[in-house]
Image 1: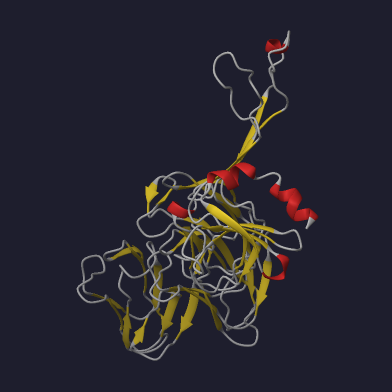
Image 2: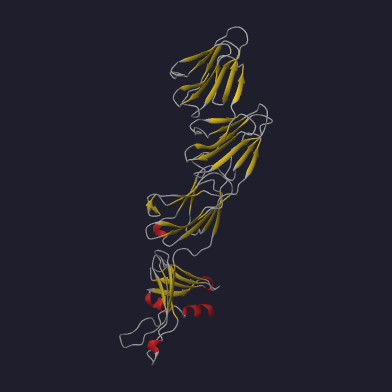
Length: 421
């Protein structure tokens, strides 16, 4: 009861200003109620037996002032003006503390105090929420720090709380784990981020952080840190999809050929790079394939034909670009005819009658070169090189090769040009 009496001593103005009534509740709790229909009163202030104090503002302001809070006319003393203000609509908390006052005594007019004031806007909670990053998340009012453990290759959205109920509120995001998927922070539909309606910002880099604060009509990014991932070398010997922290993938196809499937270019960081290098000798190869319909310099896949071949790729946000490469052309000897040349082939040699069908000049990497040779040492077989569809070889639909002859041709992106014979 001493606690209750002590607390009440600080709130005489509140009780006088409100149309309220007080009573002792169950368990010795002290209640201040609004003056409503008996039995339907709403609690405005509750002081529990334990000393806990609960305020129920119902959208109204709470203003607690010092006992002397204003001057009474031009000739009255100027008293200190201390207050605490809780904005029941926007959730702001304000303090104004004047350390002392001028009482009009001689010299007092020169001893006016400095004003020390601070306003806490929005949440002062320090709640930390751990999210798995596999699904979208609607940010809650009591959230403060959100750590997103991203382990998937899909995009997930963090939707900010409504501006009207969040002014002054602050959220801090931190990205964790190794998934390649985006973490996108966005406002409610139709609301603003950085002053732009429906704008978004992404947490792309591992361990990156983002801080946002809500202003009068928009969320604003106040701090953004992108941490560059440490270079990580990964070894793969079976089908593999690079993850967020991979940088270099050493592909060993000693046991069997396999495919390295790239993650979606639209999901990883814009500008994300991977270097994929073949380490095995022998016939088994490594195919590097874009995700779904995504391409690598305009084609679906590229093969590493020989030991130590490599490909360095970079995401442009839609597809993958070749930044650097060393791809040895493969040698194809006496294939069954007719033979459909692939973008991976380099030299094709045959000693039989038949046809080598070229891939479309537009479908292979620009500048792709084939050398095709009739390697017969007996008889007079004719090996015919046939362009795809209406494409041509130096203006001709086909290019015949007699015993011992060869032709080296290069794609100009539309047709084939003879560069050696």
